Amino acid sequence: MRNYTTQMDAARKGILTPEIKTVAEKEHMDEDKLMKLVAEGKVAICANKNHTCLSAEGVGSMLRTKINVNLGVSRDCKDYDVEMKKVMSAVNLGAEAIMDLSSHGDTQPFRRKLTSECPVMIGTVPVYDSVIHYQRDLATLSAQDFIDVIRMHAEDGVDFVTLHCGITQKTIEQIKKHKRKMNIVSRGGSLVFAWMSMTGEENPFYEHYDEILDICEEYDVTISLGDACRPGCLADATDVCQIEELVRLGELTKRAWDHNVQVMVEGPGHVPLDQVAANMKVQQSICMGAPFYVLGPIVTDIAPGYDHITSAIGGAVAAMSGASFLCYVTPAEHLALPDVEDTKQGIIASKIAAHAADIAKGVPGARDIDDRMADARQKLDWEAQYECALDPETARAIRDSRAPEEDHGDTCSMCGKFCAVRSMNKALAGEYIDIL
Ligand code: SF4
Image (cartoon, rainbow, N blue to C red; front, top):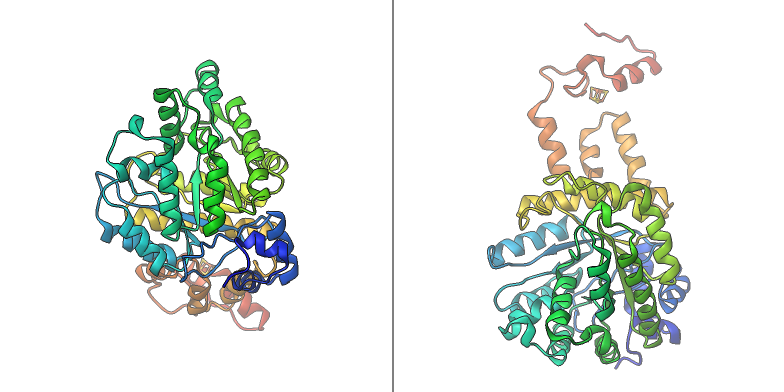
């Protein structure tokens, strides 16, 4: 029988939970130090008590940067087998979280499959599920309907839920007055905004926040405070709408912590590169060091088809400057539901961004694998290089497809006998260097 509610509650009571122990081991961090960070809310361990196959991870800026993979069926792409392939690919490539954003049909069996078979953190956005769960139009749903869906997801073992609690009736006026180029681009945020506009009522996720906190405390569901007003283009970045919502998210973070409920705060969005670090600092200050979960940031608007790259650039700078958790972006962003290959490309891009940031911010041991790669390259040891590679399959396939015609001492076809590594190894060993 647990004598604590959430990981935060346990940490505040000085109870070393199996999850805190697991995270401390994974992060090579002292258990007491980690427990203090969890107690303060600076690290979230998203671990629903009903997700029993979870291998716990911590999310916090002083830990290794984590990445999330979004998937789920839509009306136009409703093959759950394809989604399961994406799940397997994501787990194998090292994603620490999967968000099921399904928006079609009966979503519960897939959600339950994830929380009964998948060892990574599982997240959802209950507002998406509300319309399809009740099979009723948005305007006919009551505040209680939304809350009941949150409870259902909590019972199903979801580790974190995105809730767009930070927009209110005041936001409706602000969006109209401020005349943003892209208004609201958050799918969940737009649904909440539309519901408030049609019903004239206050945001149910804001108005009934205390009841939601009770549910989250009961199951240990971490709230990922959604940024409904995240900028959808560079022109809207760091504007009044975004910052005003962030201030409210700071207040809601405090209220959750007072309830022993763990929190992450979601962030932008489309942001010019020179504003990324400042956005991280402002969030850390306003939200008192709560883990920041960023969606990109995408640093230019003009690269559809390549937004895994635009977001990896922003993600690396964001994580280096304080973000803890990167939501992957795929080449299909802004264009279509990603397929299995898009998903892979998005994951690899995010892993590169996260790893680059971890090296820059000095996460203990982060650079070890780069040093092993350098040793393998110096020895022209290709198998050892593949072992260190983020995507060994692709690295091997490229080399094999263009192998040198003759043996040049195991160089590659880029330089052949002009291989700098080979020449230096021979020169330093006092050997003759044949080029022709
Ligand atoms: S041939 Fe050129 S690219 Fe290939 S390993 Fe040698 S130095 Fe590197």
